[in-house]
Length: 366
Image 1 (tube, rainbow, N blue to C red):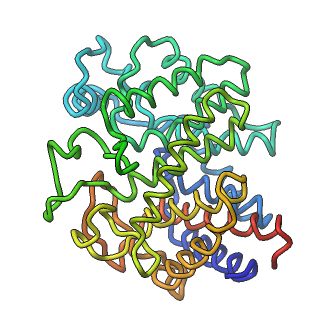
Image 2: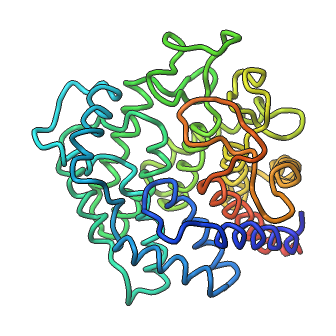
C-alpha cells in the first residue's frame, strides 16, 4: 500500500465513521482511543472537520474524565476492584475508586495533543487531579487487568515530563511491575500476557487445552509499551524494561501470526476461534511499524507489516469505509463476524495508516 492509497483508506474509514457516530460521545477508554486516531488524522491531513470533531468532543466532556451516575462507584467499582481485582483492602469512600480506574485518564492522551497545537485552549487539570490522587495513594496493586497499560502508562510518563515531577512515572512503573511480576500476567516463556488472573493457565485454558493469550489484550500492552517508549526516550531509566518486553513480544507475535498475515483472537490457539480479528491485528501492526520508524525494530519488519496491513485492509475495510471483523468489548478470546465493528478499532486503523504514511515520508517513499 503506497502513501496515497493509505491516505485514501484513512479518509474513507474516518469519514464513514464520523458520518455515523453518535452526536454525543463520552470520554471513556474506547471513545478516547478513537480520538487518538482522529487527532493524528488531523495532524496528517489538516482536514478541518477532524479537528472540529476533536475539539467538540473535548469541550463536550469538559476536558475531563468520563462521567458516571452518582451511585456508579458504589454499585460497580467497589466490586470491580475488591472482588474482580482481588484487592485485600478497600477505600472508605467508594468515590475514590473513580480516581484509580485507569479508564478515566486515557482521554488525557488526546487532551495533551490538542493543547500542544492550541496552547491557548483546553486544560489538563481534571485529569491531573486524578493522577495526583494516585501519586499520593500508597497502593500499587490496583492495575489488575493489562488493558491499563494502554489506557494509562504513557499518560503518567507524559505528566512527569510535563511537570518535572518524577512521581507520576514512578507510580505508573510500580503499577506495571505489580501486574507483570507479583500477579504473574507476563508469561516469561511465551513472552505474551494473560489479560488478568481469570485467564492464567492454572485457572483457564482454551477448548484445546492451550493457554489463553487474548489477542487484543496483548495488543493493548504492545501498543502501550511502544507509545510510552516514544514519550520517554532512550535516556529514561524505564526504557530498557519496556524495550526488552516489547522486543520479546515481537518475536512471539511473529510466531503466532497466521499464514494469511492476520492474528486470531487467541494467540496460543488460533483454532479456538479461527476467524481473523481486526483490533488485535491493528494494534500489533501500528506498534510494529512505529517501532521500525523509531529504530526499535529493524527494516526486516517492514515486509511483515506491509503483507499484514494489505491483508487486513482487504478483509476488513468495506467499500463504504465500514471496518469489520472486530471483536466487541470483551476481556477474552471470542467469536468475530464480518459485520461487527467498534470505535477503538477505527481509531487504530487510522493510527496504523498514519504511522505507515509517516514512515514512508521519512524514507522518501511515495
